[in-house]
Image 1 (cartoon, one colour):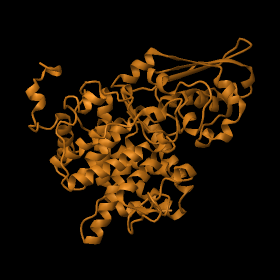
Image 2: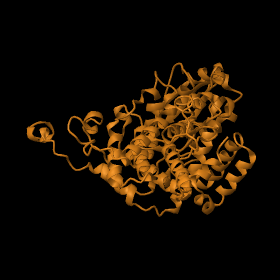
Image 3: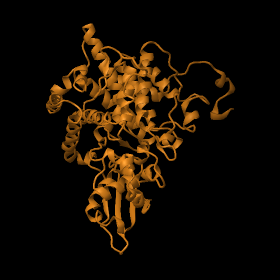
Image 4: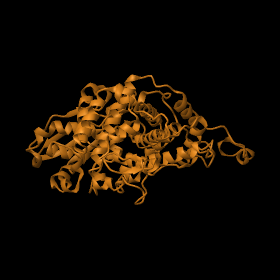
Length: 487
């Protein structure tokens, strides 16, 4: 016998196996499952509006804007997909990249945290690009355009695929970036939107796995850099390519995961197979986390809230601080606990100490606070150097509890004279499902402010009126909806 219990004959056999069950399950869900949760649709509607608000905020940053045009100058597509907040019209492949990049750029869109983490609304790069392309095509050919409701349905399913995989499968533990799940979910849904059946979805998904994954090194010291802001867009672009190829008859690879030696499990997952806590439904969209108050890596959101609460006690005594005690979850300790110099914007918005220091000192944390100009204030790094970070085991337990999904942090400041502030501890941020009633009005205020900073008043007025009328909003043809976001 050889490793894995196979015989030499079996290893040499060219017989085509049945598709891996994990890929079949995705195809069955994408094609057959009916979403019947109005709560999921309500959340998806807010997610869509919030994601495009994030896109509006991002286009003001030159490092983002330079990625939003055609891949080479002049490679435009007449009546192509409009890139929100710009004048670009692109083919659906490059549009998927651009929209995905601008939604993710400021680290301000929704979040999902488990064994793996990520941002399920990243999938909108692919979903909006394909839906708009198909809607315009239908209009030119006398067909029926896709509606916003179609996009919401696809988004619920994309969230579910990415999020359910993330519950018990840690790609970061093997050094792979979470955008591998954006590519997976977007590939499956884009294939379906383009008219693919179960066979085409399986084929496309097999190509997604064969791509393997991007290395996480661009998210971590000493290599943290801006690729983390366009990595999801890149995953969306690959997904649309795989979907287009599949519906055009490209063959799939049925044991892309399980093939001995050459499959994803053996090559990239240390020989293990995927594990699943629950079947696909609408759980992830219903429980997704919104970033409402701060553009900050989500493991730090409650830490920033704590720091904001402590600002009045600290603002006039920054020079008297002896130490700052931070408690966080194991995941937060592992990915955003950073000491030493921070090289750039991307380094700072993934540093727990930086994200706590700024609100302690200034009473705010905005996207501009990660820029070189703000970071040059010597008080920030001086305060970072006084911070002690440790894991709180309860925060870690509550983080993984499927009935809680908390993201707890605590902050306490100690002064040289022996005094201290209160210890502020927050289990879950304002974007958590348990704070939806409090959070949704603030989420919509975030959305409106972002739109008014980028679009004409009449456009924003129309969007906000439609957002308040779900039935009219959902019935909009996708291309009509996307036109409302043109600069």
